[in-house]
Length: 276
Length: 346
Image 1 (cartoon, chains in turn green, cyan):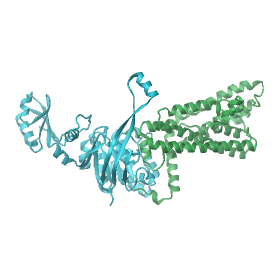
Image 2 (image 1 turned 120 degrees about the horizontal axis):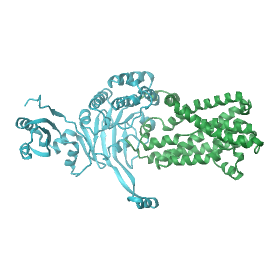
Image 3 (image 1 turned 30 degrees about the horizontal axis):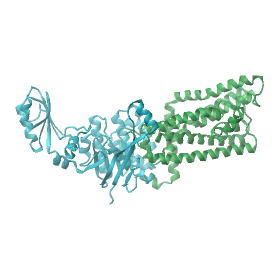
C-alpha cells in the first residue's frame, strides 16, 4: 500500500508532474540530435513562406502586408508553431496498438498527464531556442523587431498557451480514436493538411480568399496559430478583435476538452487491451 | 478477513469481424461487415485469500490473460462482478490502482532510454510513496533481486533477465497488496527464472502479498504455488491443488530416454506404454508409484545415455482430464527429477 492517502492530493499531483516532466526531459536529452533536426525542419517551412512573400512584396505591400510585416508574421509562426505542435496522436496510436497502454492504465494517474508533461518538457526548451534565435536575428535585422509592449506580450503568452491546449487536446482526442480504428493518425494528417491553409501557416489569413477565411472562422484552426501570432506581432489591435480571438479559443478549448472526455470514457470501455 | 480477489461469474465477449478470403471477401466486409461473438472468458468464478499464491494455467488463448486484464481493471467485463483488494476493479479508480501491480512479461514499463533508477523515481512520485518508504523499499528490492549497479545502466543495455528484475522492482515500490503476473519468466534463461521465482516467494512471505500468475513454465507454478486454476476456451475447468489433479487424472510419470544403442520398440514395451519412439529417443509412461523402479530397471538392462523422469505435461493432464481433444498447447515443462546416468546409483 502506498502513502498517497497521507499526503495532500495537490502535493502528490505536483510531485507526479515534476517527475513526469523530469523523465521526459531526460529522454529528450538522449535524442538531442533528432530534436535539433526537428527544430530546423519546423522553421524551414515558415522561412520558405517568408522567402516567397518577401519576393512578392518587393513591389510594395500586399493587402497591407509590407515585407517587414511578413517577416514578423513568419517569425511568429515559427515560434508559435514550436510552442503548440502536437505529436500525441502517434504516441497514443502506438500505446494502444502495441499494448503499451496497458501499464499506463494500471497506474494511479491518467495517461493524459504523462502526455501533457511530455509536451511541456519538450516545448518549453525548444520554443526558448527559437525565441532566442529570433532575439539574435532582431539584433541584426530590424525587419523582425516587434514593438516593446509587455502587456501585449503577456496576452500573446496567454493566447499561445490556449492554442497549445487546443492543439494538444485535438491531437490527443483524435489519437484516442485508435481505440476503434487503425486510421486515427491518418485523420490527424488530414487535419494537418487543412491547417496549412486555414490556420495561417503558409499565408496570413487575411490574404486568403474571403470565403475560405470565412469558413476558417468557424473552425479551430485560426485560433491555434494565426490568432496568437497576430497578437504577438501587433496585428490584433482592437478590443473587439481580442475578445473575438480569446472567445474563439475558449470555446474550442471547451469543445475539444469535452470531446476528449467523451472519446476517453467510451474508448476505455471499448478497449481490447491488445498485446501482452 | 475478506478474500483478496473474488471473481463472480465474470465473462468477456468480443465481437470479431468475419471476413472471407480474397479481394471479394475484403470488399464484402467493407460493404456489409459481419461479426461473430467470441466468448474469451465464460462465467468464471473463484476466490483467493489474502497472502495466497495461485497460478492460472491453460493453453494459449484460453482466457488467462483476459481474466487478468479484467481483474486489473484494464478490460471491462461483459458480465459478472469482481472485488480485488477490497475494490471494484472497474470503478475503484486510483484507490484501486494504488493497491495492485500488474507485471506483463512481454511488455515493460521501464523507460527504455534511461537507467531503471529513473523509472523507480517516477513510480515513487506516481504512487505517492514517501521518501522514507521509498528509500527503505528500494533498498529491500535491490537487495532481494540482487540488482547492484544494474539500476544505473540504461535499460536498453540490460539483458532480458536483468530488465525483468528491474521491472519487478519498479512495480513493487508502492508495495501492492495484490500482484498480477502475466508470464513473468517468459523468455528468460534458467538462472534468471530461478532468481525471479526465489524473489517472488520471498517477497510474498515478507509482505503477505496475494499473487495471481500465469505462466507457461511449470517450474514457476510448482515453485510459487500449489493451487492452480485451469482454464480452457474461457471456462474454468479446475480449481484446486495441482498435485491432486495430476495424481487423480494422470497417475503416471514419463520416463524420457536417450539410448546409446539401438533397441526395438517391443523391448521398451516391457517397461510401460511407449508414448514416443524416435531412436535414439523414447518416452515411456509408467504408473507413478513404479517410476523409480522402472527407471532403475531401464538403466540396468539397456544402454542408456540419458534418462529423466517427468510429470506429464500440464497440457496433457488438461486434455486427459477434460477430454478436450486437440489443443494447440505450448506449455513447457522442466524436468522436476533428472538423473545423470554417469553418477546416479543404479
